[in-house]
Length: 298
Ligand SMILES: Nc1nc2c(ncn2[C@@H]2O[C@H](COP(=O)(O)OP(=O)(O)OP(=O)(O)O)[C@@H](O)[C@H]2O)c(=O)[nH]1
Ligand SMILES: [Mg+2]
Image 1 (cartoon, protein in one colour):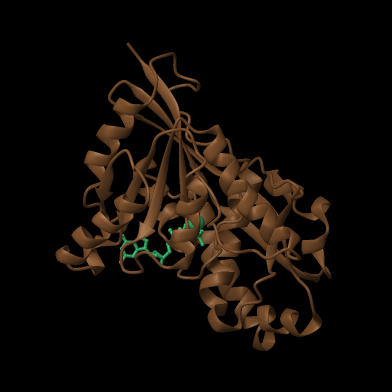
Image 2 (cartoon, rainbow, N blue to C red):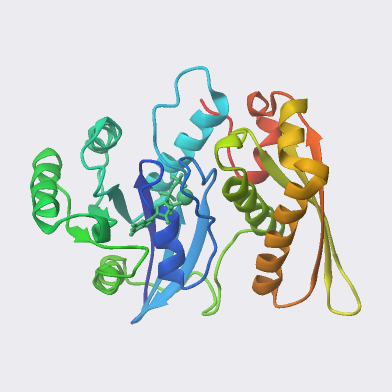
């Protein structure tokens, strides 16, 4: 008898949702950086555990996006849409952060959710055991979590037990995808996300938060290599200079790192060409983020 179901990840930015997705599917699908608001749209990962096919829905972090910020509100809406679509919700909490305002606000809104929600305390490698027990008690006093898990998505502790429980929690029924199916994401989006990750990692404090990357063309060559053109969009001239770096050195490094990762994923040589362009106020135009699968906020 097979089972199949959707598991949504919900949590504040930086809780480790994407790290957990990658850990569970056993491959890097979602980009991970130390910056908050790294994930901007739904990232689907499919895996099989025992007889169950689990469709994992990684999402942007939930934070107070404010009324005026359309794009940020679209990101937060995307996270709650995952909750509506799921059979079982995992609320990920960075255990080293604990019950701060952001996490309390998520729990508050969860009170209206009529489906199983489990608490996943992540980053236990960075927290003392007594703190974890206190946090478990305090969080469960605020909300009736189905179960509480303590894991390190980074190191893998506790992940096997989590998988066993998830596999048991989804309804019986046929698998939705073929056995080797990994994700619904278009390859163009995966490739542009990889480049965005390198921008986030290399630009660090100088990073323009509004930076985005799009794959403009994808050409498979007769010799088995792939030629990819991507554009890095920033909002202002000064940001263009930051991405380019001195004599174009920064862009070159970003391109090299992205090419290595893309090449490893597709297991073939990649010719990656990066361009930097200015696109003002793209965040206030829903058409410019529709390609990520994000919808205009209500
Ligand atoms: N020490 C430790 N760090 C972790 C763990 N899991 C994730 N991290 C780190 O936490 C940071 C954020 O991880 P992400 O997986 O990008 O977090 P996220 O919840 O997807 O963040 P957003 O996409 O911004 O919402 C990264 O630097 C990770 O390496 C963990 O178990 N232990
Ligand atoms: Mg993420």
